[in-house]
Amino acid sequence: MPKEIKIGIFGLGTVGQSVVEQIRVNGLLIEARTGILPRVIKAVTANPHKPRSVDLTDIEVSADPNFILDDPEIDLVIELIGGCDLAKEILLTSFAKGKAVVTANKALLAVHSREIFGAAAKTGARLGFEASVAGGIPILRMIREGLSGDRITGVSGIINGTSNYILTQMSEQGQSFADALKDAQALGYAEADPTFDVEGIDQAHKLLILMNLAFGGLFSFDQLYAEGITQIESIDIAMAKEFGYKIKLLGKAIDRGGSYEGRVHPALVPEDDLLAAVNGAFNAVSVEADFAGHLMAYGRGAGGHPTSSAVVADLVGVIRSFKGEAPPPLSLLPDRLVPKEILPIGEISSEYYLRFSVLDRVGVLAKITRALGDQNISISSMIQNERAAKAKDAVDVVIFTHQALERDIRKALEEIGQMDFIARPTKLIRVDSP
Ligand SMILES: NC(=O)c1ccc[n+]([C@@H]2O[C@H](COP(=O)([O-])OP(=O)(O)OC[C@H]3O[C@@H](n4cnc5c(N)ncnc54)[C@H](OP(=O)(O)O)[C@@H]3O)[C@@H](O)[C@H]2O)c1
Image (cartoon, rainbow, N blue to C red):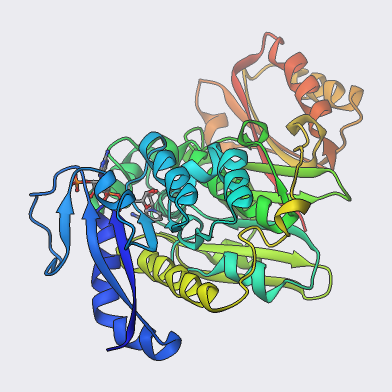
């Protein structure tokens, strides 16, 4: 009989069922790779009698969390219920009881980053969370192990498939935001309540986890700037195209020599940039390291099978860690992890796309350019939307700026916003210049 690792799994939803299936299908392969056979012996789920599409033979199912937590036979807990309250209890209790934990719960790891990683460091717990960022793409392992000798200076990416699907549909099919969102929901890409996806919150959770790992610190989720895609209109997509850009929801983190940018927002990405070619529900993460240079990983960021691939890879990592040294969860030795701050969004510098909706009057452009000039913002190009100009309503004027400090841009927009010819709030989208 091969040696076994006994597993308790919380959650038998999309990911939980795939994990059970993958362990059944690939159990012997994992045994051949590690010498230990993984076996799920217990599951806890809200509705234990609900029919499942996966074979649960030999797995006892209960609704009581202690059914797993109090079982001394269980070495590894896999948390796949989502949410923060119970999930946090499960992680902290498992750490205290010396059980290894694998989770896909990005919201928990981001919002309670300092508490969870702090407790894992204190107890020396084994914690795997590959599935929490970019589903099936082994990006955390690439950073933690493949780049363990490099200093990482930047991480950026498209790490929310729902918003990327919506933006792709708007760009390729000319759909409105509302229609593209409806399609995403029908295809199962978006939740009934899509707030976390379309407001950039889900992407911000993942970016925070990436920052902790890439920059070796414990960042605070509250300091991370997050803006979603709900304000993007078809005209912005069309204008971006005219200037050679695609609009993507980007997560971007930069080490500015000890101060850190961390932000999620829509951005104009040059059409020839690799990230511009990431379409539909796919994800991509790009990493800048001082010796390796630029790297990019691409794949499926969600769905039962891709996500379970990452969960089961963590399970293999846990088995290997029982047999010898394993890299610490956040790469740095736990006693070297310190809290780090993220720069306020006003401190970043970028090029900007500004779309003004103005009433067609004499002198409007002069007033806008003067207000920008007063804040030392210089203009790289300007266009008036001809289609809109034919309408009786407001006219769209698009201005691209050179690099400017966001604080100055906001000051100028505040002043312009008071001008009586401004018909609607001005649209600001950052341009992702290399
Ligand atoms: N789906 C993805 O593509 C994906 C990708 C990356 C990460 N994740 C993360 O993976 C986790 C699971 O996602 P999912 O899509 O598999 O979710 P899901 O399909 O909604 O499944 C959630 C499971 O948790 C169970 N559950 C919920 N509340 C519970 C409670 N209080 N006590 C016990 N069980 C409870 C549910 O029980 P019943 O079935 O009995 O009702 C269900 O089996 C989340 O943290 C999510 O963010 C998901």
